[in-house]
Image (cartoon, rainbow, N blue to C red; front, side, top):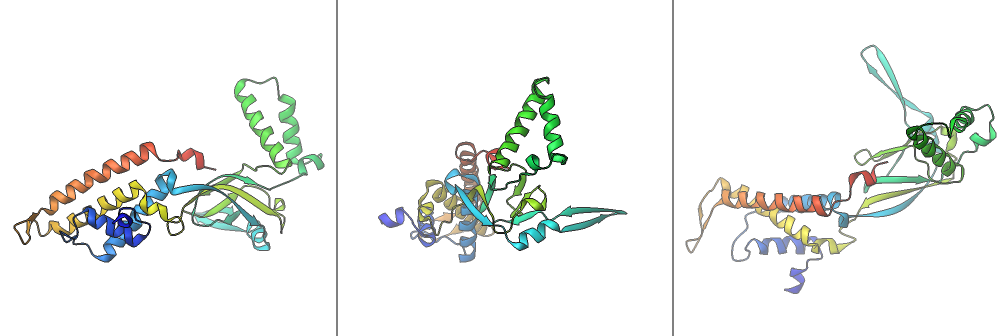
Length: 269
């Protein structure tokens, strides 16, 4: 009994939820595929919205010849009579990565070595005007100088873009910045795999949310057989079960999003 009160696997979580809904006293009329969908939705909601469902990580990637080829290529999109080109300047990222905060390891000495280069001249002009500007320009120059310093000293390169649904780390830089065989390091947030961290199945919000979703599915199944009469005179009202489940789901989601979610801006590159 203690094991089932503290589930540590998918099967035990399913059994726990059904017992919360009345089994084995009542038969919870849900198909196995519906149950699996409920558990999948629960894990996804928990992973993407609760800080206990993800973790900060540092991942290495070695630059390959394929990466350099991709950065040198481009794709063309035609809109009416106009052609638009976009470079494929991205590196594929594992699909469990939710957001990337920093990228390390991209180094360039072009600013110091090329007196007539665009980067050097831009840096020189910004520095020349430094000290005689208003507070907004001061802040912009400060951000620019700090970024340059980090790049030149093997620090963090800030010009990158990433969205979870694309699984692509776009880096807005010249292909010559990439050196085959060199490494880049990303600081990121990634989803925790429940099959590896089985304590997730025993999280209170996971248990509550999975039970509420299962109750909602049960109610939906019973609505078309409203006021089902069970042996012993017990009557099940599918619409009432469904309505109660919706209220429980709304309460749980509101609590998780207001108290336990990571601020979105913390993970945007």
